[in-house]
Length: 452
Image (cartoon, rainbow, N blue to C red; front, side, top):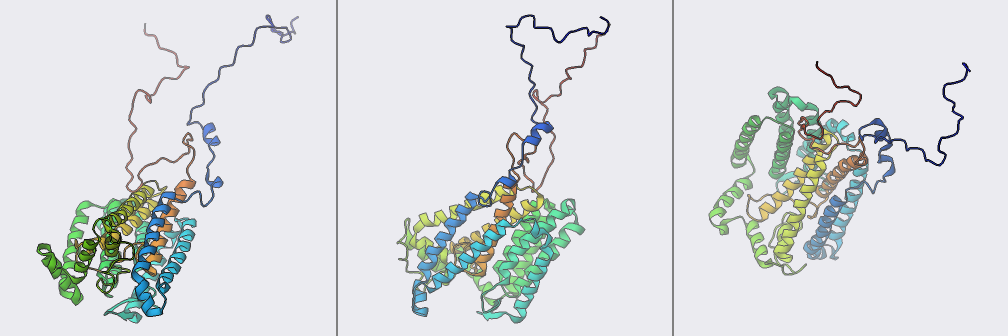
């Protein structure tokens, strides 16, 4: 009897018909390693097409489609008189756009973080190309801006490369951005080299775009506001002195005509006057696609710089407002991609690309509406162009790549490994707010303490 166990496990149940009591089930917290292990990443299950940003593709697709319509409308007569075929120049634009879309998809497929490693070689190559333009460039209307018989403009590439390099450089500096020695001075030196080489062509609008985009990226990276304000004032004064005293002869005349047009619009530049006539002819709904008259010898470069005025004449105020609305939606989507980026470099890169596209569009529209002095700047994704359109589509591919990396790393919402949606351009750590729901509670096995 002493060797037998105290409880015989072979004994029958006291009440065979009574079901066993259910075993209590404890809910597993969402932050435990078990749930985190079950939340497998979706990166390996998503195809290339499924990770592309559909909203961004739709916006760019509509802009490119409008570009096809307007390029044909502005070039069919010129193409017929030059080549005997009204579609020759249009087909050149289609070819350039097809190549650009292919390069855009390739760029979107490549992880954008690769460009951070090659940012320095890209900048050196771009500076070399800008120097080559000054030495061996093609002289067109008193300026040297292109190579290879006008088919390649290094200044267009310089805008994109400046954004890539600034994103890589600023993301590596972090806390040194506010330093005068390690932040502002190297930044001003790097941007100044590119801007001066572009001004020597001369190309004032592109140089101003490079400086403006780099300055806004410097601000987003966390620059000191006082340093940035002083530097901006100095750049403004130096730029005004250069344009009025040392710049090309046409620049001073354009500024004088712009100042005169503030009081009397009839005193504005010839280019601006013809654009205003086009908008007046268009009215609310326009005269009809292809029916505009200002493009026949009145508007300079109607297929590039003046294409927004042709849109206003043929599609009216509604068509022009649609174009402006598309650019606004593009900016909103680009900023959303920047905020959701997984790292500091991607956030600055997406923000810089978006600002660059917005400034180019704003500059062209502002010139056509007599808001700023006249300058040559194509309308992004709509104007006829080779290198300009190609570089813009490459920039779009980089935006898609930033969005794809974020999409591939997205996990289910209930996963503890899911990345937090936050602004990583200028990260600011915040302390969690203590409420009744997250207040620390005593453990279950703790016993109350009695005081005698």
